[in-house]
Image (cartoon, rainbow, N blue to C red):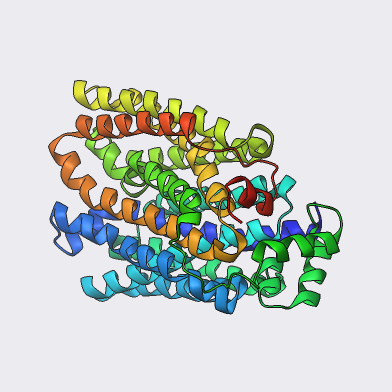
Length: 442
């Protein structure tokens, strides 16, 4: 693995770190939001999910700009959006302004969930692609952990009414770092070839490496995949020949959210308060959840190109079912405490080792070069629509029955296990162009 390849992957994946931070930081502020803006459970759910409305639009809308302007240009724009949302939420003067800046942050998260993994997949040789794309997921969970840790530290500073504003505002600093480091990253060689910029693509491939070991063979293979004499980057996406990657991307994205993962991330402290923890303990338990997420994501990153995507999904699915069932039992019996903490730790570990590590890698792999941006956008769009639905409804449903909420998620994960066993293909160690052929796409 060349230093240029690793460096470019890490920088692009910083979009994921800000994605994770922006997603999780609100978990420590739900009580403040509810009291400051006098919100009911319904409007609290809407406020939390307001970012997800932006995320949905950002994910579905970024595909064409990424094809026209390039992956790198879009990453620059996302860095600016992250900075503005951090400062805006910190200085929000009323509920409407807060919603606007959260929505803007959502646009950045949606765009990053598409462009960061897609860019890394396009610069990476197949033998490294899984672990390099998974760096995005590692950074997402690192961002989540940093948000939880930042919230916990800030809560101990006794800042009074400005406490939660500081929780939102600290995101501005990594956004600036992300923007500056992007100047050091190259363009995607596959995007360059789609634009006919062969010399520039050759230079990038020489620095980042190839699947074949021969730059000219790699260029010929990519050009054959693009096949722009018979296809264009503007051809219709929803065609019968693309049905397999479309259905695979939609399925893995839907199952990702039916686990309830975003309910846990957005409402970590809220869930522990439901189980009887006080505010400080609830924030500390959130840090434990975030640390577990990080550790098991690192484990998945180390083995994803060895064991493959499918085995990780199988292990994660079984862990989901067991842990969600235990969480449901904890709420049903009112035991809470250590049983709930243990169940949620196993749940987040199962997610990190399975779905969390696999989803963005898998979606970035299954689409042909010529429609990858739009395919990645579809997968991300589906993911965020489901995330918005789960996040908006969770406070209302959990207020009625905590155990039934977690039991529902457990049943959905039985469905995921069956899908992985019967339908999901393995993509490890196969070039992007070969995956296209194996899915029957000419």
